[in-house]
Length: 311
Ligand code: TDX
Image 1 (cartoon, protein in one colour):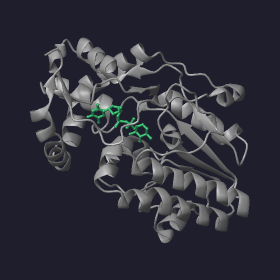
Image 2 (cartoon, rainbow, N blue to C red; image 1 turned 120 degrees about the vertical axis):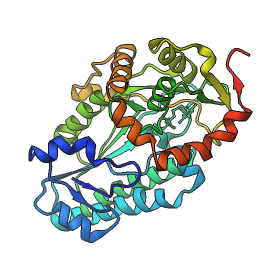
Image 3 (tube, rainbow, N blue to C red; image 1 turned 90 degrees about the vertical axis):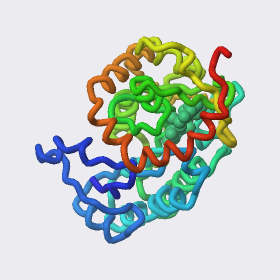
């Protein structure tokens, strides 16, 4: 496993696997050919999970997204070609299709990225398609809907709202709170990715979605209910710039491969809430230091100007 251990990386998450000898860890960047060569030597397959992923950060500064998500993917592909890698799985996102106003995107839908992060992921996907076409690198691309579950970084919506609730803080909900996301439990996503890695056809794209979207306000209310906190903890704040309303994908191609999601949203959210309750030391460490600084500068003014839900 190659990881640059940026602000979002956390060796603690895989410590047991490394100690048990199941994972060999190498610190380095996917945008550095020398690091990539060291890590890829002797591998049969490459799964590119590495990315800058947080939309809000890409709105503040997009350069690191282009470096990691476009140049990084290109570097991996180039070395994969050189070393004759037998399978290259590019982990992508529903965000590449842009916002949906009710239509379900298929793998053939046009790419209409709505923010710098999504545009960078499009760059990586297109580079993958180009390497398949030009050099026959056996690339498959997965496009998943919103993940949630244990170990997710606290900058993301669900962990942020769970941990803020536990800390007694307000929940910063963007805009009218009616934007919706099709939440997929992380284990369902990983099962789908593994299946594409072993059974997918080179050169193909696979949408991975559950097909049940929830407005953000509903998810926020559910988190508060599960933790026994009042709805008045929700604060409607200034909307995210270019905020995509919804992502809807048709994932029948995954169905044809034999994949079905196994987790129901409510049960999986309950499990996730429980995990954050049981692992307070973990997320308190992640929330301290650099993240605290980011949170305070990014949210403080917005929260001050926000409107309490129900007022
Ligand atoms: O503080 C917040 N308040 C809020 O209302 C945050 C962080 C988010 N939101 C809203 C924005 C979205 O409508 O919640 C929704 C989910 O937000 P994120 O967790 O930031 O996810 P999203 O922007 O949908 O992107 C995610 O899914 C696609 C991942 O971050 C991407 O990496 C993935 O590609």
